[in-house]
Length: 312
Ligand SMILES: [Zn+2]
Image (tube, rainbow, N blue to C red; front, side, top):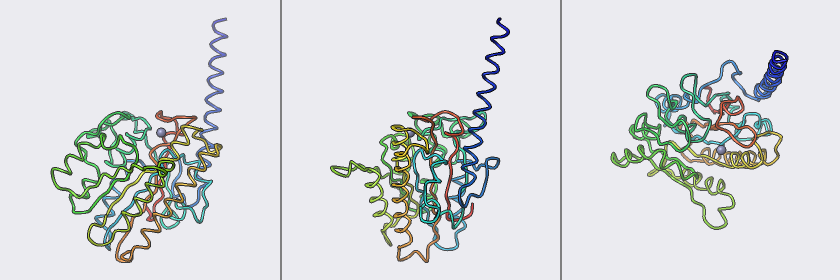
């Protein structure tokens, strides 16, 4: 009897893993059909690649180097097919360079939670939390070590003005060591937390977009060279209604912030000095999601993506 029970359980587990493998397969198949996609499931980029490619842009650009990174917090890759392949920010930007599948959450031996604090600290430092020389933020609620420094600091030390625009009140604590270091050394780094007031509180991402547009519109003295911002509507909708492309309100959140990203990109292109500048424009996310949450290691949470206006 015991043996039969065991066999039943094993068969059940096998069936479940087959169903799960099929689901994973269809998830990647959907991702691999995206316009301008340059890689597949067997050649994912790593989230740690973002810092080197930004630093490389500032080192090798022919004209005056500039960069902006626009984040859609918690935006699953299988949500992207709902964007217009021609006019959306994600795809029109990728049409000039490419769209790439990427992974977050760390690697074997140094896994980290698929949450914003670990994900963005990796996006900003080029390191996983727990690898040798890692940043230490393997979950929300932890603070970054002094080393490795963020790209905001590394670029500011080379004389570039950098700015981080965000809504979540935890970032100043997570990056407290870098804030202290920047202040002590008089580095041109801005930590711009957006705190919408009155009516604007109904749509914090719109308030954030206005601040980013205003910052990127400055030309000449006081202009910024590198700016990163984080829109949160996708993550909020995912937690409330479900991280699933079948959830209409999750899709609407993406359409809204993609429109904001498009306005930011138009602001960049409308700069009177645009022709003498060389802009790297990246749109990406920090993690995916599953059901009403994220943090674990499923492909739905680990798979992320990046749209670039230059081939990577
Ligand atoms: Zn979240």
